[in-house]
Length: 275
Image (cartoon, rainbow, N blue to C red; front, side, top):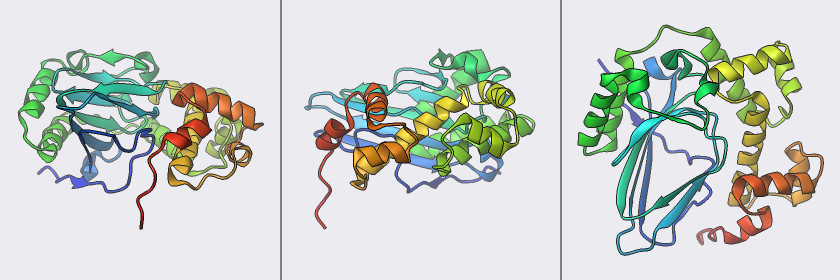
């Protein structure tokens, strides 16, 4: 029996445009069943209706995850996207996705996940004709829960043998995300009890990007989250807290990834709702 999915209520991280000025936008996330929890982080669904309004631009920061995505007009497996992700939302549309845990797609892919970084791979290339059937099933569903159920049945039927390396990669990425003190590859290697070269090989094989990239991206996620919450200290203090040598270095990296300096990004955020 396939376990039911449940709604995830926590706010997603890395969404640079938390609200749109016009139109309707819907975003849901559903947790996988226990048998897939080690491989899948969650299923997600977005839908938009911008009819009668100008297109709206959605931007998100990259995560160290592989996504299987089925949209109203395209589909594919997307390796880790190393730059800011930008999409113009016009008219009506939807997208359903499977967000695999770091390391969780390597057992399905069968080779180094670094080979598909910043790339889209056709579903048929990984799953054969069954991939096309999954696309058909998901597009025929009327609700996100039904889409997630179809995807879950698909993955359970192809669940690979347990891979200890995948689990270790996921645990190390989780340690980076949860521990602000992990600011260098050397610190992570010491915590993992691995030498630096072995750690880098594990990340290239199972995550798709190096540990230094993951550390820097999660620190930038933290910076954006603090700015959005209105809880960020002065930029100089924030830069030091996130492991940067100085404010200028932090501002350069923030601007390169987010597309604007921290002060400008903060000014364009919507004001918090009145209590």
